[in-house]
Length: 139
Ligand code: NI
Image 1 (cartoon, helix red, strand yellow):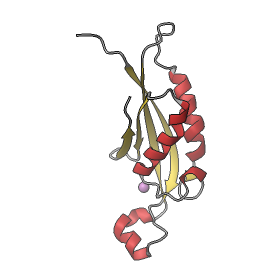
Image 2: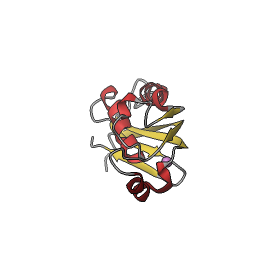
Image 3: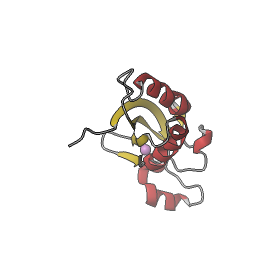
Image 4: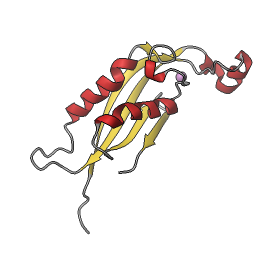
């Protein structure tokens, strides 16, 4: 059996933000039926967990410096969403209902262009201790 070629690394960052689950094209009753009490503005202590895969650079022993990954997640995501209202305050989330699913996809789109082709493997958004959503890619 040969050794695996790639190793996965992960970084987790937290942020606090407010949101409400509400579709502007629906009535109040329809929104309440779909989203329950989540139609009301409320907050979460979110965490975003990013997994990157690659070969170990023999000169550093790293796949990628986790400080660099932390800085990237902070610059591309955390600084935009921390202590914000996700429905109104973040230009690149406009027009989306800020579910954990939609956040995971949007965060993926923020990070992907800044990482080597195929190295971004997973973006997981923890909305509560019990709920998360993630997207993952090949490569
Ligand atoms: Ni919520």
